[in-house]
Amino acid sequence: MKKIMTTTGGNPISDNQNSITAGERGPVLLQDYQLIQKLAHQNRERIPERVVHAKGSGAFGVLEINEDISKYTKAKVLQKGEKTKLLLRISTVAGEKGAADAERDVRGFALKFYTKEGNWDLVGNNTPVFFVRDAIKFPDFIHTQKRDPQSNLRSNTAMWDFWSLSPESLHQVTILMSDRGLPKSLRHINGYGSHTYSLINAKGERFWVKFHFKTLQGIETITNQEAEAIVGKDRESNQRDLFENIEKGNFPKWSFEIQIMTEEEAKICSFNPFDLTKVWPHKEYPMIKVGTMTLNENPKNYFQQVEQAAFSPSNIVPGISFSPDKMLQARIFSYPDAQRYRVGTHYEMLPVNRPTVEVNTYNLDGSMNFEIKEPTKAYYEPNSFDGAVEDSSFAEPDLEVGNIAQRYDHRVGNDDFSQPRALFLLMNDNQKNQLFNNIKDAMNGVPQDIINRQVELFEKVHPDYANGVRKALGL
Ligand code: NDP
Image 1: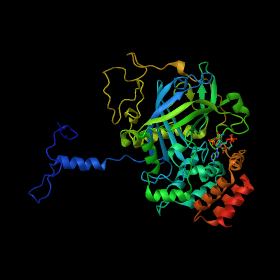
Image 2 (image 1 turned 90 degrees about the horizontal axis):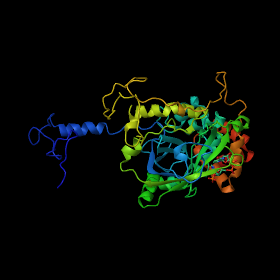
Image 3 (image 1 turned 120 degrees about the vertical axis):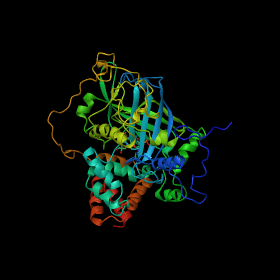
Image 4 (image 1 turned 180 degrees about the vertical axis):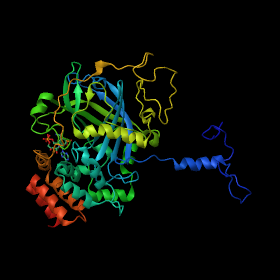
């Protein structure tokens, strides 16, 4: 027997094809609740799209730990043999929700691990570095990626104006303009935690850590010309590829690896290891294999499980923690704040965001708390009524920090050129030519003085870099 359709109030519906009208040709009656409810609901079917990373694809999977790294961390999720369910959402940064997938852009690589100690979120990118190192510059940077307030057009001029005035962006700009700036599919990219985080072991010792997810499908990229042809036929090429491969059982996998730096090594490191525009060179800080990540399940409902998914680097578990990285510090605030605005006060109660462990919080009121609590006098803390209490065994070891507060100039004594140079010198001739031509394409319409200022920065990275760009531009 077929199910009977109902209103959202559960009342049976007799006719979902015809509105109630006064006479056969007459106007509709206000009492037609089913009509009014459908139209009213439609007006509310979208939540604000993410200001950045609006267009994304997501899938569930599993993280499996194959190596013993207990000397670095007590986190249960990172112990050998552990298997943890996860959600991965991969996104472009600048494009709106309806933007094409095959665009040159950084890819967000946002992970939520549903661990036995609460959610652990690792909200990274497919690049190990970022355009700025101080969050006070982040809203300005994003303005350059979004639309001109008058013309409503994307602006190459705004991007290169900002980048050429912000030399710390050179490293990320070089990656973005390289072959890796336009991935063939979401299965063919690496993911990086990007920030420096910390691991804490059972003895209370802290280690600084970088997280890496290396694609086992291999890095594969496409050219601007190939992307144009793809977008002309299919704006959802990355979403389609990921969804269809998982449906077919062709599950994408990544090798999960870490780099470790001791607190003592960090003090004598030649660069600031908490600077998001820098990588940790592999030779000095070798990769340590930890496990594998597999995506094996498509969401059942995109809106509920991907659009409403709310990631935040503030979600950490005992044994994994933050670092003094200024960008990470800012994201610990701004991500949950964005979710409260975008999804709602109790966004973490939605099934996709909900931890699999018991949640014992005194944050109860606020819109859409849909859990009925047993009556209790313990609705504040401290209390004398058996309410949940803190546990000092989860306290972190002391962290040494500087003691003079000031707006320190992050450019003083900071080398913005050596690491982009190391990357440039890694590239073969074909990759260098792609870099030069991609920069030429992206500089279309940019005033000459801004181009000249940027080429001077490329010159400081390597004369061949500047000359290659000049030649591509016909200068
Ligand atoms: P290594 O030679 O040990 O490592 C080079 C790394 O560069 C490899 O991990 C490789 O990734 C990656 N790579 C190669 N081509 C590109 C590209 N076009 N865009 C982005 N990454 C690329 O040297 P170092 O560790 O000393 O690093 C040298 C430079 O490599 C850095 O300045 C940085 O720009 C880049 N890099 C470094 C990473 C790190 O964590 N040390 C991570 C990613 C990039 P893969 O092995 O996956 O092919």
